[in-house]
Image (tube, rainbow, N blue to C red):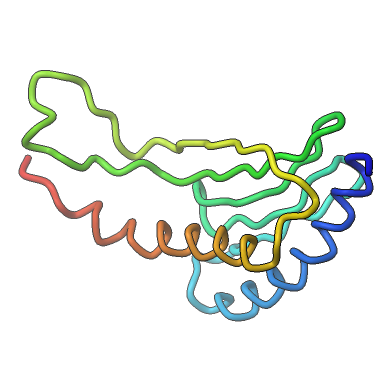
Length: 129
């Protein structure tokens, strides 16, 4: 199976989950979000909950990648003394996947994105400075 076929299969399974999530979060996000990204010609499908919080499946050549982006938190404030520790910056993780990724695995990835997005306002206020 080539990457285009694999992308089509993953896209078909992921889009209903993304649309359901958009309906659920429509009144709980900042105006203009969440955004469903669906561009099969460019080989990308995903969701952005807020700036810096997104999940996408990308087709790159003959491979599929799961791309997660979350905003880093400035944690461990006391132990970070003496070295730079930047928080509030987006962190992007890429993982190669196959078209055989299960629906459960896709839902788990969405759950991880939601957990990071829900946790962010709580952590951003924790600082000793």
